Structure formats: structure tokens, C-alpha cells
Length: 171
Image (cartoon, rainbow, N blue to C red; front, side, top):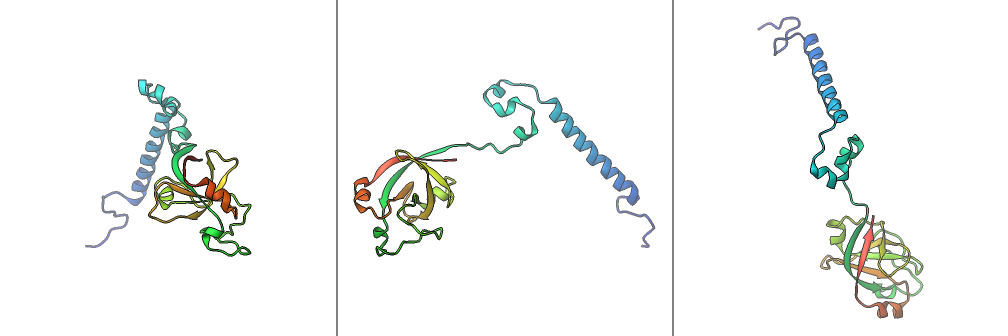
């Protein structure tokens, strides 16, 4: 079968089909904009959900994400000596940085990263401590909801800390 000039499988000329496609896309876009500007009617559940109270596209299509996360964890302590390092050398954390005595660092169990959204190098807050701690190291995969607080080279303070339950919070 000889192809005729201007033939397309749907029987329309290429020029007409592209014009029709453009018109269809334009109609879809305009109907979407009309829907957003008109807004859906208010229902009783919009009073409970502040995102549904407004018609702003930024709020309607934004990722709903909690700003503050809190989690009860078991906290233990570790020092440079407990890592098996000599007094004059500093251990390296899983993120590659040296753990010097002045660093506010914690190690986390892998489930906190996989299930709860904590990331390496993220700053977190610990109940009962001032300031923020940086997630710099990983613990054994056999542990669940556990953190290890780095006490530098102060073994006495680490032993006194022992094992406690506290609240870990992050943004």
C-alpha cells in the first residue's frame, strides 16, 4: 500500500492532529486551573485538617511532613578507649570524621535510619542534654531503638551514665 501525502493512522492530517492535541491539552489545563480557583466546597472534615481549609496549590500539593519527630530510645555511652584506640589516636566514625573529645556525637542503631528517617550527619537533640548531637556512627544491626552517646575519653562519666531510656528528637 502506497503511503499518501498527509496520511496518518487515525485518518487525520498531521496538522489537524497536532492542533487537536494542543486544544485538548489547553482544555485540560484550563479545567484544572478553574477547579483550583473555585475550590471544593467546605466539609466538616476541613475544620480538622488545616491543609484542606485553603485553596492554595502550594498547600494542597505540598508533602505533609511533621516538623518535629520524637522517639523513646535506649541510650548507652561509649568512649574512645571503649573503641579500642590508643590515647594519642582518635577513632573514626562511620561518616569518616575523627571522634575527638570535644565532639558531640552519637551512634544509632540501623533501624533508626531505615524505619524512622534519621540520616547520617543529621543533628538531633537528647532529653537531659544541652545542645545538639551529630549522628556520626552506626551500631550493631542486632540492636533496636538504641543510641550510643560519645563521651570522649571520660570513661568515669560513661560508666556512671550506664543504660537509660530517653527521648530523641529531630526535625
